[in-house]
Image (spheres, rainbow, N blue to C red):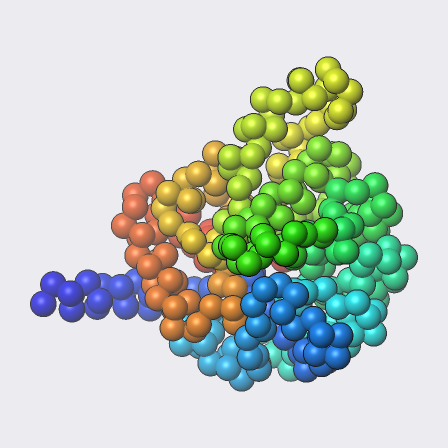
Length: 328
């Protein structure tokens, strides 16, 4: 009987939040053109695990069942090597948005490491396809976010006040043994995300291009631990002329965090040591997690956001309000 009451209570919480229309800022589109390009190049297992099956109908079905009103689509890993494939994927995502304007937004992929091609694609995607933002990989062929080579791209994105969604990719170069012993998604993806954001902070990328907003995936990766360490070591690094002045406040102000993955009350509290409640966002990681598990995870989040008095004021902010403000 107690188990039934707990289940019914969870359903009541879920139904109440459904009425508000959840916004999912972390979901992926996997197009036939993208899959074909990976098959042709023999890259289907580049990230150490197979791509899940994907179609819009199944995505909408899960959204309807879970109470998700809008999902933000981004291209999955690995990064296509062809700018033509990137263009086809962006056009496919734009088509989905046109056909389901209340249900989908998208952030366009870019054909890095070719910076000039990436700038052309960013302008086309934002101005012509009406993309809602840009997706950037943590690195492409060893070109990591934060490198000076990307400053011209960030300047263009800054002019357009772009929202950027980050996603970890396989580190380059990599010892293949790393992937064999611990799959990328279990650990190295968190390192990749932390590495890319730390790079940008150490060069004041987000402070210099201060009209950009960046969504960090997977509950902020290791950043709640890495940022205090960076701050404590900055004087030593500066004394050895390894870094210049770092405007931590300005850099951190640009960062938002999705709660895809191993969210919990403890994780949210940890994130609030480096950010504010209006920078937290719901994310599912569809279709990389089974729909049933995503629904269970969402119900669990709704329950603890309702039960934990210190977190309850942030419930609507996390589920939809913050994303509404970010994407306007």
